[in-house]
Image (cartoon, rainbow, N blue to C red; front, side, top):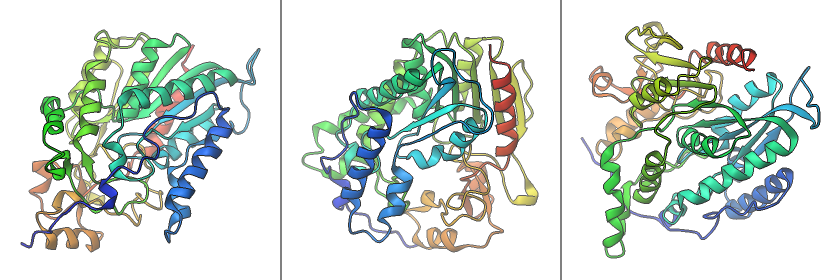
Length: 383
């Protein structure tokens, strides 16, 4: 076993770009244009600059096909999509297309601290994330009579928090929601006392950051901000219809928190798509067997829910392999996982799965099409 030596690089220092939300009162198309300009300027000179910009930029979609117009606004329904921690709007592309097919006006924001480099999360504050969501909801409300919020991971957390404050929000769509995380995260803020002396102390994970659409390195401030968000969630759940999809084996957040949230919400139209190895039956829950031996899939994963198998980057035949659980402790296994055969196991990075042998973390949802149909059925039942 050969360990990889890790050290801080330029990417682990703040750039001073995009740590605050600056959308302000801009019309959404202008916000998109200004953000693209910022990303192009920041990544200028890189060989894959346009790829990075295209995947990290906020975007908007008009509904396709026949859709219901509003009585006093252009659209009946609109939805704001918010990505997760370390992620980008790329991760919301396929969900955005699902909503577009269902007749929604779609808008997708870029959260502050994202799209540039991991070091920009060192100084970001959760209130800046909330500003981005509030801005996006305002833009949706300007064009659609019914406002819906959809989010992945902390994007879901931010959606729940804003939905509790904004009476215009008619429903929520939550994917791998970060409603509960490891309580040890409460102590992450302690790094502030000595990180000026030991810069590495500000980081939980120092990783290669080779993914153009996602940071891989994780700083403690980001965890501190996420924990604070979870502590601010309403205790009584949501009083509006909620569609959720989550993996019981999620290794990033506590999946039990999603179950508790949905049970507390108790709206008659609520629906939870629950990916698990063991069958589970209760009202409003759709169990999906996450084990697919013929495709070498041991379970679903936090990283898998919102990506279909056809995605060219994260999909079944995608160019990206998530092997970060072997880095930096085992360089040889990390390399083998990166370039290994298609026959290797895929799933969540649980101890049980890791015992099976070489494992890639699953980055796509083999049941994505069925999930879209469940979403469509939920949407058809909305008042």
